[in-house]
Image 1 (tube, rainbow, N blue to C red):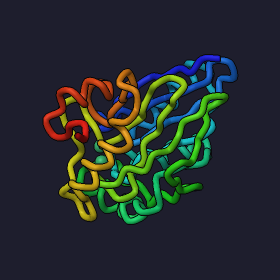
Image 2: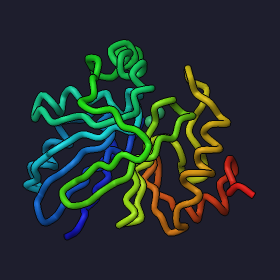
Image 3: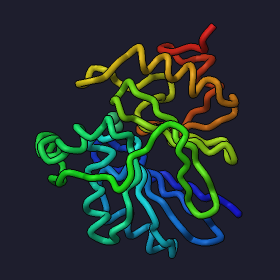
Length: 214
Ligand SMILES: [Zn+2]
Ligand SMILES: [Zn+2]
């Protein structure tokens, strides 16, 4: 009964795609498939895994631009983000073209997510937390069992997500981090969308953008 996690940076933005799998059943999930579907698929084959789902934290191109390419290899359900990010997923063709990525079609999730939903990889559950601010439909995936957050572009080591996009909201981001992330155990590890891993306790003590609420 072991959850395995491997970070595979994808796209020129070095986005931390995660390959999660249940070591007993070999059932696997990819999170935030920004691109490099061939690399991801080769790793899945190498490990002998059975890809079951794709989970998305939000609709930005570096997190969703490779979804169609993976689904061309295996047509798995796309779970998330929250429906408020539909406008981002609808503009993937223009966004990927603008940034010189392989052009992605519009991505239409199989299932939108809401606060309190639960998603599973094999026997292992992750709770869905809705954290608007970077994008309005951003979610993160939290495993209480393993003390692990798949965090997307919310909280980075020493930084936070940008909020200068359409429908971004700085105050929402700060208050949601304080109320939904900084209330988790300090030892909870965070895999951000970019850069090195961190922990809730470390960011509460040192993050210059958002401290624990008084
Ligand atoms: Zn983003
Ligand atoms: Zn990103």
